[in-house]
Amino acid sequence: MLTAQNNIDMREIEHNDRNSELVSQLVTVWEASVRATHTFLTNAQIEQIREYVPDALRGIEHLVVAFDGAQPVGFMGVDGQRLEMLFLSPDYRGQGLGARLLRDGIANYNVNELTVNEQNPQAFAFYEHMGFHTVSRSELDEQGNPFPILTMRLD
Image (cartoon, helix red, strand yellow):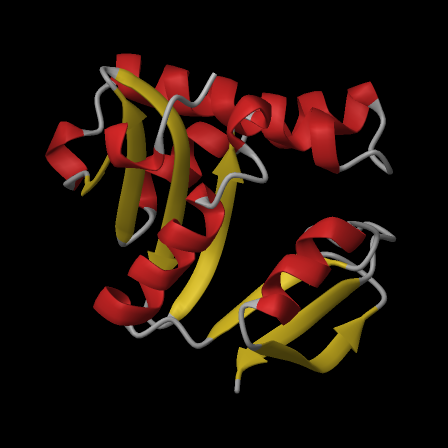
């Protein structure tokens, strides 16, 4: 459980430091986060998406990981000025860590755009609270599945 925001160390992980142990830990964070927030996905769908997560983590331009001690508890991936991923361990949600990661993305990587599943109202509300607004909607996600996606931009 999160003891205090001050104990969380955030740092960008270079491509050559994204070893299999770290990637495995981040996939665990991703899966716990998705199971807690993406209630519209079935177990089979989560397992199918999970197969692509390691390559996404290895390939993303900027990967910022939040550590509580040596344990990764959240991460953000940025490509260009676009937030591609933001996931937190469920025990760390609602305590400011997501906002801290996103503010870091805005300040250090000029993040000004993202997509969010329309069926994830908590994430949508979070991004709206952080100053993003919806500019478009797609009926299908990036893989062509019937999960509506909202594109949001920073005000």
